[in-house]
Image 1 (tube, rainbow, N blue to C red):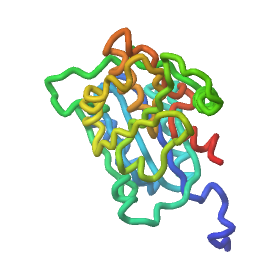
Image 2 (image 1 turned 90 degrees about the vertical axis):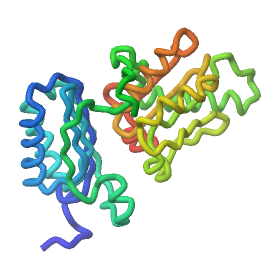
Image 3 (image 1 turned 90 degrees about the horizontal axis):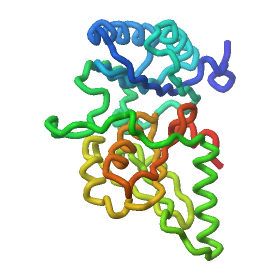
Image 4 (image 1 turned 120 degrees about the vertical axis):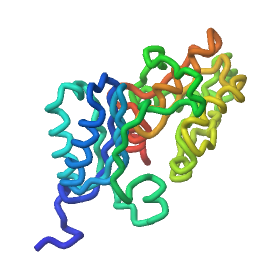
Amino acid sequence: METNGTRKESDSYAVLLYYTYAFIPDVASLAGFYDKHCRSLGLVGRIRIGADGVNATIGGRFSALEEHIAAMKTDSLFYGTDFKLAPCRYPTNEKIAKECGFNSLSVRAVKELVTFRSDSMLKSPKILNAGRHLSATEFHHILQEAGNSSKCGETRKKEDVILLDVRNVYETRIGMFKVENVDTLDPKIRQYSDLATWMDDHSERLRNKKVLMYCTGGIRCEMASAYIISKGADFENVFQASHLERSSFNHFNKFSS
């Protein structure tokens, strides 16, 4: 018998993040499948399904998550989806596990995949206008270059680099990117629908800046970057992690030191 210290990687705990923007013809049916399928694999987390797509943050055994990915890939809805899977420690802190949604399974049908505004009368920005994607390496390089140039006393250009964290306070308190001599903006929002108001109130801090933003799984960056760009010509220099490495989740894995 294997002890906890010698368990195979496939039986260790892991986290899976993914999303897809695609037309879902039968939201209720897909939600029912997710609930039954994930419970059969012992998975926990949050899954949101709307007519415009799916957003999932799931935890469980590594092997169970791999089985889940294999099942999703058989559906054409998930063609080209970036499944971000990585091992992690089981969340032993019950309060944090509850806040992050890892103490149970929640599958919900929603009107909108990401609720960008609390006021339903206001339109969300178009995802097609989202910020340009950067690989984790490019993202890291720009931050380091900006930090080093400031450290050496070089004159900063008009397009100063701003690092924008669009996660909520429950996530940012676990950890954030910090680069010396680079301004980091933390909106300290409790829910994502508060972000648009924060960006409106702090738009001058973003004007004519090179904005590098990050989130946990990538989907919130899509909407947030599109919203900043929609503000006009002084707000076009906005970047987010790339299609393949679209989140702080992958960036922390690659550049944690």
